[in-house]
Image (cartoon, rainbow, N blue to C red; front, top):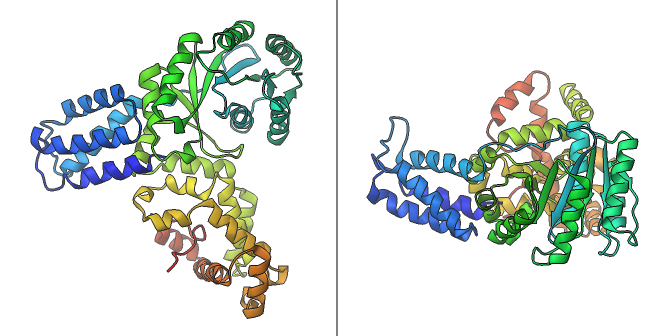
Length: 456
């Protein structure tokens, strides 16, 4: 997300180097580039105009401090204005109500509502330790109820069974009564996708809102629709008292215009970002962290939080103890490392949060893709247990068998073994008292073992 915008903004800053003060003349071209970058990111025009005006007013006449270049001054101003545009602070879910707290999900067809219901249920269970129940009031889409049932099983949430022959309001009332009787703390209600111009369907969700009296009414919208996402959110907000927005499919959106437009156009905060297909791929929206990502500064706080909640600490401790004792680092350990990173939302998602990754070469970004990691894991899975424990025995005939079994080429097997060898050498340095020394040496670099080497 924001890849194109990041590249344009960072290039603009480079062009301001060497100036002693930000003036009307030297900032004119820079602001023109910022304006074009925002428009290309599909940010709504009124939002762009107001943003540029605020930056211009603050920037002109700003003297460069001893430790700052004009480019850095502009970045500071842009960073602060991006935060203001997106909402300044994280807008948490308001669950301070007599249980069950009802969360009503609304949105267009295909926006990812049902998946977002499951993601939110998982997030509330894991992060907030809430007892969550989900229910589907979508009686129109075939298999919508069954889809939510399967997702509820996957995330460990209670599921209230409904029937396509029932009226959505009846389902909602029954689910609410059931939640009250069974000590459910949060009830999340999935609804049918609808267009804001469909008066009958909009009247239905208004009746649902009246029947449930939800503490949170979230609008789920596809980020890849750009400024249309903000416009549809505004239309829904006119019909429903929305409390926030869930922006989905942000992992497939290189522009990010929706995130920069929604708050200013609707007056409603973005509360969550959907960052992938898996049920763990949901992040609270922090405007300051997102602004840092846009400007290539990374998002280390979110990265640390991901590691805190999703890394298997027992497995990590066993590996650390194994390495400290000087025992061999093998391909089983190597595979476990890659799978741990994948569980944390995907390697590309993690690296996006690292400072400077937006400015990395395209070839490096391509190889950070999760499909490349899945290929490496498939190669290791095609090996015998003995080959994984003793990689040095993998020679010509074994390589051919492994490549055939994993649907890859011998060159891919060679690349994997080369990467593993590099990781093993690093691990050897961690033996005994070398762990802290190695960590200091890795400071500011990519995590070892996480990326394939660049292809030549």
